[in-house]
Image (cartoon, rainbow, N blue to C red):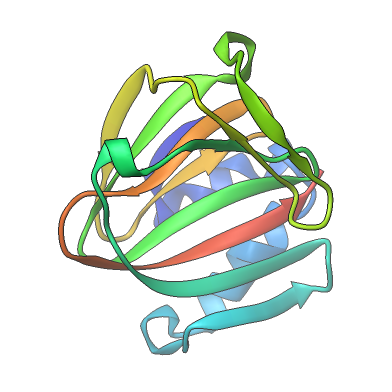
Length: 147
Protein backbone atom coordinates (compact mmCIF):
# COMPACT_ATOMS: atom_id res chain seq x y z
CA UNK A 1 0.00 0.00 0.00
CA UNK A 2 1.18 3.51 -0.82
CA UNK A 3 -0.28 6.88 0.15
CA UNK A 4 1.01 9.95 -1.68
CA UNK A 5 -0.01 12.94 -3.81
CA UNK A 6 -0.90 12.67 -7.48
CA UNK A 7 2.14 14.82 -8.35
CA UNK A 8 4.38 12.02 -7.04
CA UNK A 9 2.69 9.13 -8.89
CA UNK A 10 5.45 9.15 -11.52
CA UNK A 11 7.92 8.03 -8.83
CA UNK A 12 6.19 4.63 -8.73
CA UNK A 13 6.21 3.88 -12.50
CA UNK A 14 8.62 0.97 -12.06
CA UNK A 15 6.13 -0.89 -9.83
CA UNK A 16 3.73 -1.63 -12.70
CA UNK A 17 4.06 -1.03 -16.43
CA UNK A 18 0.63 0.66 -16.55
CA UNK A 19 1.45 3.47 -14.10
CA UNK A 20 3.12 5.56 -16.83
CA UNK A 21 -0.11 5.50 -18.85
CA UNK A 22 -2.04 6.81 -15.82
CA UNK A 23 0.56 9.54 -15.22
CA UNK A 24 0.26 10.66 -18.87
CA UNK A 25 -3.53 10.56 -18.67
CA UNK A 26 -3.53 12.75 -15.55
CA UNK A 27 -1.19 15.30 -17.18
CA UNK A 28 -3.41 15.69 -20.24
CA UNK A 29 -6.87 15.79 -18.65
CA UNK A 30 -8.77 18.10 -16.36
CA UNK A 31 -9.64 15.41 -13.83
CA UNK A 32 -12.18 17.59 -12.02
CA UNK A 33 -14.34 17.78 -15.16
CA UNK A 34 -14.51 14.06 -15.86
CA UNK A 35 -18.07 12.72 -15.57
CA UNK A 36 -18.91 9.73 -13.39
CA UNK A 37 -18.37 6.42 -15.15
CA UNK A 38 -15.67 4.27 -16.70
CA UNK A 39 -13.08 5.50 -19.18
CA UNK A 40 -10.33 3.59 -20.94
CA UNK A 41 -6.66 4.50 -20.85
CA UNK A 42 -5.28 1.28 -22.37
CA UNK A 43 -8.26 -1.04 -22.68
CA UNK A 44 -8.41 -3.56 -19.84
CA UNK A 45 -4.74 -2.98 -18.98
CA UNK A 46 -5.42 0.46 -17.50
CA UNK A 47 -8.74 2.19 -17.03
CA UNK A 48 -10.45 4.46 -14.56
CA UNK A 49 -13.80 4.79 -12.89
CA UNK A 50 -14.95 8.24 -11.77
CA UNK A 51 -17.46 8.12 -8.95
CA UNK A 52 -19.29 10.48 -6.66
CA UNK A 53 -20.31 8.45 -3.65
CA UNK A 54 -21.84 8.81 -0.22
CA UNK A 55 -19.42 7.91 2.52
CA UNK A 56 -20.35 5.40 5.22
CA UNK A 57 -19.43 4.26 8.69
CA UNK A 58 -16.77 1.54 9.07
CA UNK A 59 -19.35 -0.95 10.36
CA UNK A 60 -21.30 -0.50 7.10
CA UNK A 61 -18.33 -1.42 4.89
CA UNK A 62 -16.29 -4.55 4.16
CA UNK A 63 -12.67 -5.15 3.39
CA UNK A 64 -12.02 -6.02 -0.24
CA UNK A 65 -9.15 -7.39 -2.31
CA UNK A 66 -8.51 -7.84 -6.02
CA UNK A 67 -6.50 -10.53 -7.78
CA UNK A 68 -6.13 -9.05 -11.28
CA UNK A 69 -5.89 -5.30 -10.67
CA UNK A 70 -4.03 -2.75 -8.58
CA UNK A 71 -6.22 0.14 -7.38
CA UNK A 72 -5.04 3.73 -7.37
CA UNK A 73 -7.80 5.60 -5.54
CA UNK A 74 -7.42 9.35 -6.16
CA UNK A 75 -9.60 11.80 -4.22
CA UNK A 76 -10.85 14.70 -6.38
CA UNK A 77 -13.26 16.39 -3.97
CA UNK A 78 -13.41 16.38 -0.15
CA UNK A 79 -11.61 13.58 1.68
CA UNK A 80 -12.22 9.98 2.60
CA UNK A 81 -11.02 7.56 5.20
CA UNK A 82 -9.85 4.14 4.12
CA UNK A 83 -9.11 1.01 6.09
CA UNK A 84 -6.27 -1.44 5.56
CA UNK A 85 -5.43 -5.01 6.57
CA UNK A 86 -2.80 -7.12 4.80
CA UNK A 87 -4.16 -10.12 2.92
CA UNK A 88 -2.06 -12.50 5.03
CA UNK A 89 -4.10 -11.44 8.09
CA UNK A 90 -7.51 -11.92 6.42
CA UNK A 91 -9.28 -15.18 7.22
CA UNK A 92 -13.01 -14.99 6.55
CA UNK A 93 -13.59 -14.69 2.80
CA UNK A 94 -17.03 -14.28 1.31
CA UNK A 95 -15.73 -15.71 -1.97
CA UNK A 96 -14.04 -14.32 -5.05
CA UNK A 97 -16.06 -12.99 -8.01
CA UNK A 98 -14.00 -13.47 -11.18
CA UNK A 99 -16.20 -11.11 -13.22
CA UNK A 100 -15.82 -8.13 -10.88
CA UNK A 101 -12.36 -9.11 -9.55
CA UNK A 102 -13.67 -8.62 -6.03
CA UNK A 103 -13.30 -10.63 -2.89
CA UNK A 104 -14.93 -9.36 0.29
CA UNK A 105 -13.75 -10.20 3.79
CA UNK A 106 -15.53 -10.16 7.15
CA UNK A 107 -12.35 -9.43 9.11
CA UNK A 108 -11.67 -6.12 10.90
CA UNK A 109 -9.46 -3.34 9.58
CA UNK A 110 -6.09 -2.92 11.28
CA UNK A 111 -5.45 0.67 10.20
CA UNK A 112 -7.64 3.63 9.32
CA UNK A 113 -6.20 6.65 7.49
CA UNK A 114 -7.40 9.76 5.67
CA UNK A 115 -6.86 10.45 1.98
CA UNK A 116 -7.31 14.14 1.21
CA UNK A 117 -7.95 16.05 -2.00
CA UNK A 118 -5.27 15.37 -4.64
CA UNK A 119 -3.90 12.39 -2.69
CA UNK A 120 -4.12 8.74 -3.66
CA UNK A 121 -3.92 5.36 -1.98
CA UNK A 122 -2.46 2.56 -4.10
CA UNK A 123 -3.57 -0.93 -3.13
CA UNK A 124 -1.84 -4.02 -4.48
CA UNK A 125 -3.36 -7.49 -4.75
CA UNK A 126 -2.17 -8.39 -1.24
CA UNK A 127 -3.71 -5.29 0.36
CA UNK A 128 -7.11 -5.63 1.98
CA UNK A 129 -8.75 -2.23 1.80
CA UNK A 130 -11.98 -0.62 2.89
CA UNK A 131 -12.78 2.57 0.96
CA UNK A 132 -15.54 5.17 1.25
CA UNK A 133 -15.49 5.74 5.00
CA UNK A 134 -16.48 9.08 6.47
CA UNK A 135 -19.33 11.57 6.33
CA UNK A 136 -20.77 13.37 3.34
CA UNK A 137 -19.74 12.65 -0.23
CA UNK A 138 -16.47 12.17 -2.07
CA UNK A 139 -15.62 12.43 -5.75
CA UNK A 140 -12.77 10.16 -6.77
CA UNK A 141 -11.17 8.19 -9.57
CA UNK A 142 -10.27 4.57 -9.08
CA UNK A 143 -7.60 3.70 -11.61
CA UNK A 144 -7.41 -0.05 -12.27
CA UNK A 145 -4.03 -1.41 -13.40
CA UNK A 146 -3.73 -4.97 -14.64
CA UNK A 147 -1.01 -7.01 -12.92
